[in-house]
Length: 288
Image (cartoon, rainbow, N blue to C red; front, side):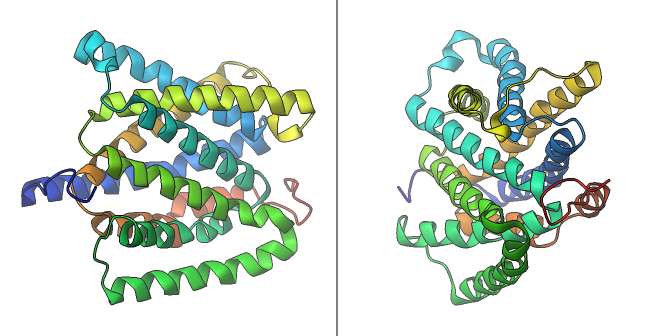
């Protein structure tokens, strides 16, 4: 699987660097939107996650048909793309649930374990060469995440481990990006991923709401403003994930890991500000 695609010229590498940088700037802002919907609009994380994938699919389907016609739906690896969607939906659900109860900055810091997990997978399963300097850097970051987990665990209990589970599932999701490589175009990958995520979250949401779990309560958007925010969430997430998926088919994982590290260990000012806007009390409720 290590030779799925060949390395592009330097111009493609630069293009990949710019794409990843743009994607990593968008993603934290979308997580802040999810926190706003959960804490201010009182929408369950399960419902927010479902809308995130539903609107992603609704927005990309017309574009896919316009660009490539019916043939765009004929993916070479459809089940793998659907599995990507299910893994991404499960990871997003865990993350959105975590940011409902915890400050965004803490969730991002704990999520820092994801680069460590993905780098280990690329080395042990794909046989990619990872130098000792990268191992040391990632291990130091992993230790920093553990420092954050310890006080967070005392305040929030098992909720503090949700970003760790999210990191593992998202690492598997990115791992499949490498497996698919350039077999399918990014728009097809994104659309099928959205379909898989929507189907998965639809089933999970119905089961959770039937069981009476508060974090899976089904609800419609409360007015045009909420609808617009959810539409923006699906649109931006689709754009960011589509951007971040493409470079993994070009280069080895170690070329792109620093971008997720920068996203996780040093949250942008927007994330820090949003974390301050929605302070969380130790009992897990939003502070007035």
